[in-house]
Every structure is written in C-alpha cells, then in structure tokens.
Length: 329
Image 1: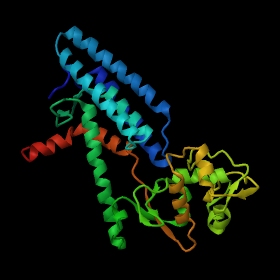
Image 2: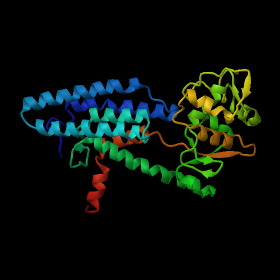
Image 3: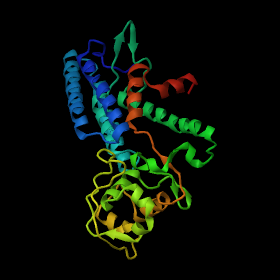
Image 4: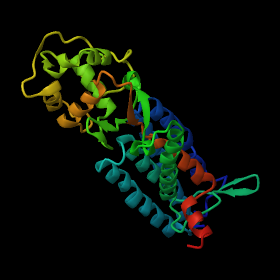
C-alpha cells in the first residue's frame, strides 16, 4: 500500500484528519434537511488539512524517507481531484456545497492513512495511486449509482412504469411547497430538466402568494404581474409557513406578452438557471385543476454519498479497485 511511513493509529496527522467524519456527517444531515450547507463548514476542515499536510511533510523530511512519494500523491489530490469538484460544479453536475466538499477532501485526505484497530489495519484495500481523496470520490459515485435502483424498486409495486421511475417519485400536489427537487413533467410529458422547486418557491414569494392561491385562481396570475413584488429569497423551505410566499404585493397589472410574469421575474433574479419557458411550463403543470400528484426528482444530496464514501474508504478502502481485482481486471 502506498502510505506514509508515519501512518498508523499513533500518527498525529492521520488522527487529526478524522475530524472530517463528524463534520461531513453534520453537513450531510444539513443537506438532507435544508439543501443548504454554510460555507463556514469547510474552512476549518481546510485548515486542518493544511496543518496535517505540513505536519506530515516536516516529519517525512526529518525521517529522510517517503517525502517524494508523499509530494506526488499530494500533487495528484490537489491538482486533479480538487479541480474535478470545480469542473463538475461549472457544468452543473454538482451543487456548490458538493464542489466545496470535494475540494476539502482533496486537502484533508491526499494520501492513505493507516489505522490499527484491534489487530487489524484499516483501510483494508488500497489503490495503485494511494490518493485517498480519489478513492472517496470513486466510492461516492458507486454509492450514488445505487439510488436509481432504489427508486425503481420503490416505484415498481405502485405500477409506475414510466421513465421517471428511475430518477424520481410521485408526490401529492399539495406537498410541492415543502419538497426539494425538480419537476419531471411538462405539459408535453416527461422531462429530466423540469422546473426547480426552489425556483418555484422564489416565484411564489416574489408574487406574494401561496401555492393554494395559485391553484385556486391560476388565470389571475397567468395574466398579470405584481406592481410591487417582494424579495424572493433563495427558495429555502425554512421560514415558509404552509407555502406562504411573502407579503401580498397588492396591485396587479396585465402581463402583456409575458404569461405568468416569468420574464419580469427572471429578468431580475437568476433562480437557479430557470428560463422563462421552463418556469411557464412548470406553472402550467402545477396549476392544472384536476392534478393530484406530480413526479419530481428529489435527487440525493451528493454530500450523503460522499459521507458514505468517506466511511467506506477509511475502513474497506477502494471498492472499485477491489471489485476490478476480484474479477481479474
């Protein structure tokens, strides 16, 4: 195994790195509950990672062995794994918190530690590069791939044989204001890139109406824009009461060539990349009077697979490399 000669249960840097476990557990809980992880979560861990890196480097320099390999592994972690988080965020594959989590892991876990517990050494399975941050990321991706299977198993007994069954679930229409995710339906049928529910909450608060208001009188809001709209916030559920969007803005004016006021809203607010056409399509679906449920893609906050990937990596090690070795590849 390509590990630092200093690794072990008595290694100060490796024990210091274990602080990442409770921090990631809290971040995963926060992400599931609110889809929001404060930036202040990561900065202390980055500081811990920098301290551990410096500690390892100084000790290896004094020891006179292992320094070059450690520098190579650290360069791979910081120069390859960390930028991956940024790149995937830029192309829309990750949220901002997910990218920051990966960058943090690249700093905290550039090399494999080794923990001796009850006569056994963990992680059990190593990887050729010996870069633990890459192992955590690959394990997280493998764990994330199980999510579509779990959704299909959940939806199949209901007879829900649609493309959405692999990436979403149906929810009662009245629960939409308290859900996170993205609509998988448009008036034309299935879509993977429907209206973001955070953006929908922003729209409601901008107009100063509740979801019930919208459904009870959709024509009124389809054909008007508020003259004095509210600040929409960031779309978080926290602080909203039963879908309440904000103070009633009062007067409305006709929405000339702007159904639902979508252009007026999105001219001023980005709303997670929502387009006027996408907003209008989602509002049409959600305001259908006879609709009782809607398919959404709740997704799974990627910090959850990252947390599980971290725990698996610190105990079992590199699952992908172990699987490939097991089948002779």
